[in-house]
Image 1 (cartoon, rainbow, N blue to C red):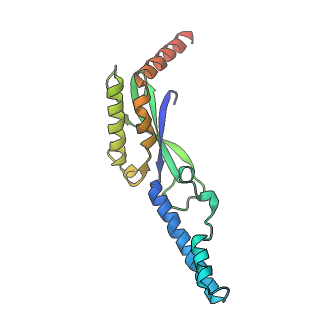
Image 2: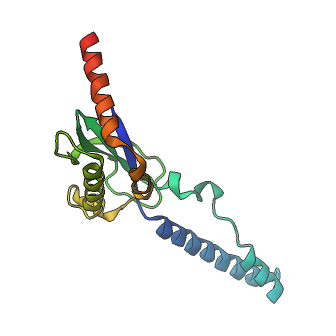
Image 3: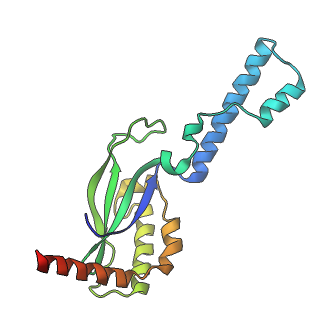
Length: 182
């Protein structure tokens, strides 16, 4: 797929849900450490317990970054002439669990046309992209995506500054030039 305009990641859970999960795991590890210390008589002081609470046992530091460890797919927005379309890349798995060890993400096909006008202006394109992302989050186009978190914040924040209409025109002219030379 040439002419990818932007890509929106899909996560198993939102950032807040992920860090809530990590906090719960940290608290469980802390509880086990306190019980172990009491059981074996290592240090029964309140000071030691307070120290453990302030500096809890670590939880696999390689898995702390949410952005890279919980991604299960993405949506590509691409140009097809002057139209914008969306395609889905998603994890190949029967079940998406918290403990994914190896993931393979594969192309799942076109989701939908995002814009339908042949000569769209920037305001129309922005409105259509926002509406499309909202619909995808609620499972309108692909029902199973409603269970996951589509991280469109960065795209929506920067969308106002893109001249998408000009980009589409340039890509179309480039494609026509390449077809002429071929």
